[in-house]
Amino acid sequence: MGRPKSPPDVVIRRLPLYARSLRHLLDEGVCSVSSHDLGERINVTAAQIRKDLSYFGEFGKQGIGYDVVKLLQHIEHILGLNREWPVALVGIGHLGEAIARYEGFRSQGVRIVALFDDDPAKIGREVEGLPIIALAEIAAVVRTTPIALAILAVPAAQAQGVTDQLVAHGVRAILSYAPTVLQVPDGVWVRSIDPVAVLHSLTYYLAREP
Image (cartoon, rainbow, N blue to C red; front, side):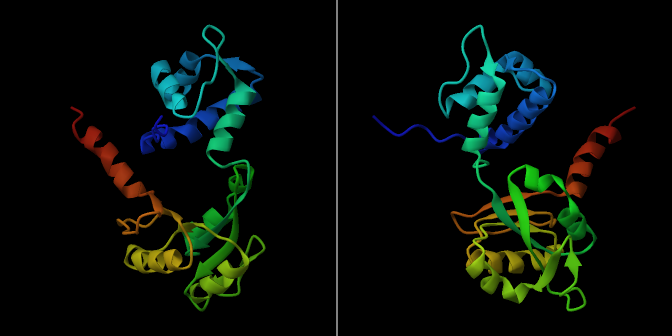
């Protein structure tokens, strides 16, 4: 018997949306939900939800639906949220500082534990109780804190060099706000957020309105 088929990346990207919706249901006091009702909350068909979850096992019962608490626990386990992930934040400009001050990370399984920048004027200053450390010290920090995930809030021109340095010292997952495509070796995962590109994808539709 062969190995179970690995889920496509698009399925992995939907799992956090399912988890978020399930948390909202719990806040509303809902204990059981059908795939149809869950799908309506995130604009996904019931069939797609059942197919996505089938990559990871059997969940729910025909005609009964999903136990919200149990399904949320399963998805959080699949996503590794049954543990806390230490995160390095690189680039403490206006965006980076806003990210550092965001209170939602720790409640969602991630915790920013180190701030890095290459601006001598910023090094040593504290944000939310964390000192800003010179980027050159990343190796020393990783030796004492097993950081495998980083957030990049640096200019595009610096992003690849910073990425190379992070990867060389053991970082294996990067969320990048830099408006550029990062090149990484196999076994390193990158997600990019480019607000300008997203806005341009919306102006396409507005430009075609009469």
